[in-house]
Length: 171
Image (cartoon, rainbow, N blue to C red; front, side, top):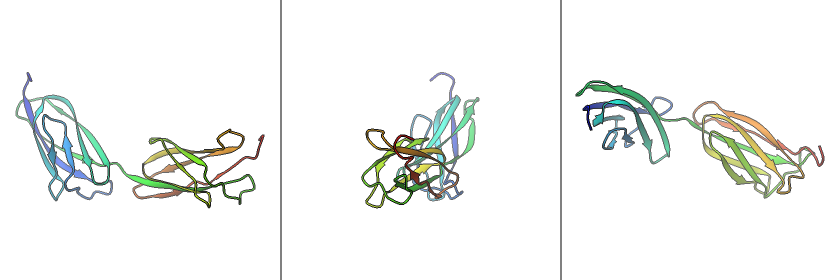
């Protein structure tokens, strides 16, 4: 590539600031793995605006950071913080607020779109949800009844409860 190359080194951290070992880091012509202390070095990174991305394959967590490399042979240092994730759980109830709705498909809409089905007690669970705002949608297949609930994951490993109570037919 015309223009030259630089070296980018740095550290990959979990959302709580803990160094991440064995994460895959890319952004240049090759990939690198972090050491036990989260440190990495990427050689031969083309000059210009680049994005350095890290992936913790074991947990499926990723993160990225921009870097601008202007001078051939430059040595830049960056910090990549992996995304924080939490869990959204709840139950789906009939309009009376106490009778569980079993076997219903529930959708999570937002930064990650997922679906699951309620258990015998009307319970559902979405694990490893990135921080952000979400809508939980639970409707009968014919849309004759259902409702939504708004929720938000704010910090790492948070468990947020979002129950959904049907409105009652025709409401």
